[in-house]
Amino acid sequence: MPEQNTDKLSARVAFLTQADIPVLKQTARELDALREDVNKLSARSVSDAISPDPMLTVKLLRYLQQHKRRSQTSEVVQIEQALLMLGVEAFYNKVPPAPLVQDALQGQTEALIQLLHVVHRSHRAAEYARDWAIRLTDLHFEEIRIAALLHDLSEMVMWIYAPADMLKIRAMQKQDKALRSKAAQEQVLGFNLLDLQRQLVKEWSLPQLLLTLMDDENANKPRVRNVVLAVNLARHSANGWDDAALPDDYKDIGELLRLPPEQVMLMVGADAGIICDLSKPH
Image (cartoon, rainbow, N blue to C red; front, top):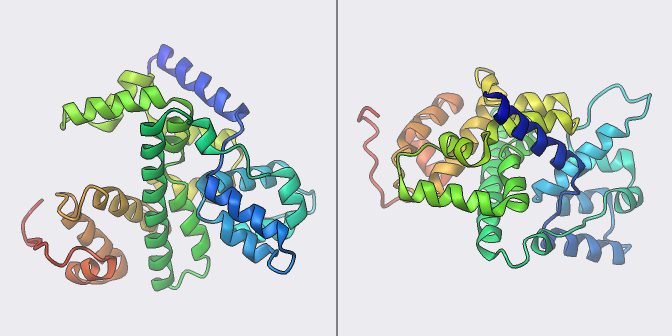
């Protein structure tokens, strides 16, 4: 990467490391409601409220990593476990559900819509990854779910903090369907989002296990393969169940789960009206 681009990446990482990442309004509402109802307030109920929110998830895990007790010998990746260690009241005081994404993007309606699309896509990836981990009898399936949920974190924070640039990248790719995401990102930002993600998760001191699970370069490992395939399926199916990349996804998922591609299609809820010729080379 050219020196100028390296400087741009370093500057962006430095900014985001200092920034207070906003959370979803729905998450804040649910957490406020729980705090007002003592009968419902527990580590489990708070965990359930946090779980769908990638931004608050990463804020909690980051805080816990940065405030490790000397007696803590293992990393904490699961949300409920993190809350039990920190304490529910301490969570509200130390990692409050604020500021809000909707306030950060006030007046940026299109950027907000695109961010929410990425969050929704991450939810789907997380659900797929969790379900497949359970099928593969992975007892720590929640770790897999969180890795898939946070896989595209850099894209989310850039929609929040660089909406104009992200809209420009989107417009370029709509105009030129052959333009690859990485090339468009480097042209507009001076770096690509994958490099930003790798730098961010290190600077944010996220658990090493999570860094491994989120890194596509480790895709030869079954647990990482699960995350990568879940993210791919969520990304491609977001374009419609007739996306040209999906037949390959079904084959790859089938190999992971030892299922025929046709059964994978049924399992993930692919549109039954679409006939995919899985025998064709792609």
